[in-house]
Length: 274
Length: 327
Ligand SMILES: [Zn+2]
View (cartoon, rainbow over the protein chains, first blue to last red):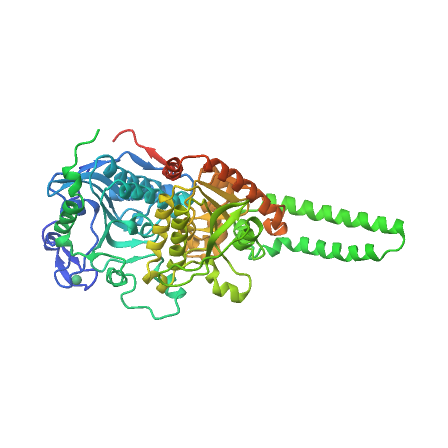
């Protein structure tokens, strides 16, 4: 793996973002950043996500060479992007790779919200596309973990086109018998939700994740009716039929493994290609 | 920052007023010499009007392009459908929830060839604007589009779409019925098509709501249309917490037709009559007719598999990425 973050120092405390209770950092980390009091699922960094779900040491990063351009010369974009790289140690908001899940090889893409809000510009769009294409070319299931505010406006229309580009890659999975599972994490919004995320074979979400097309304020202004209390949460989407399941973090690995084993069963038995 | 396209059209409107008055003088003038004199002056005024329009419209800034793309006399989808197609039969049902008049569609004849036409539709009167929700489609609109795309595929009809929306509907109801899924599914349905698909951006190409019906083999964009990942006011609100800085955001977003062409995101700019498509809608329609005819001939000659592959490859190539050498 390209880098590792330092473990929290023993004795340090953190506060739950939801119930505000004080928690031991080590305990919080051991509980997968889920609050033991209220069950709030705090955001994970990409490598925490990988370690949580996949077989130990099985992750190999791919497409790491891709770097963002600043095609529009958009005000402050180059600086903001450089700062995000510096702060997170990542090159953009999406990390690709292959890993194994209870022994089954999978192609994965993980968004990290800490990098410019997980926004999708050309690099993120290219990586998502390649992760889906890798599933097709290497005959393995694809799992994408979404965490994004939407398209990256600093790359203008190029970002909008990533919605179509990633959708084309999903179409390729569908016509080639490659299962694709999307995991919505907090938050999954706008241009990401309205493209590859919403057309997965199976859509799973973490509890209470914020999920929506427009910013909540815009939606509420536009609507005339009553706004439900759980508007734009995973629970709201589940009720609306837009999600297949809400899965708690501790059960994510086993749920994904079962789905990959069943939906990708035909891939394990088919004759090697090439 | 201008608030309306009418601001820079004011001199034109004044000139046209004068021209109109002088024309009635010409008609009433019995003396042939005097009459000729007056007619020459009318011609002179008309030249001045055209010269003004020509220079003014050849140097519109990005924000002015946004305003003209939104201008209410600009031809809308149904105007082009009436001008370009025969026998259009509008089909309204999404067969799932309800009728959405922000998107219209149905079969029509283009020069005797059956095609499926789908487009966003704005309204001109207050009533029609409300009925059409300002061309902001709800999930039903995209699901109707999907149904029409699939029907086109069954009956081997090319698909032609007209793009003109500020955005998809962001309301609570749309959210609960899956506006995001509807847009994504519509793009997916377009990628699945093996018939030719041509799209024309005729006004506002507003983010996800626009790309939802713009997955084509060839995408044309009218000269004064705009195409953007986010409305400029929304971009300004997020970046600078100042929606009134829309003009600045419009410049930064590079949402004009020449930028879209330069980045290879549209294939061809369709020149508009001087002063915009609304000054001569039939001339604007003629230009669209020519590219549609050429596009249908070109993609009609391809195999179904090649058409589907070309469409996927067209979008696959989009994006600007660099490759680091040391990783
Ligand atoms: Zn808590």
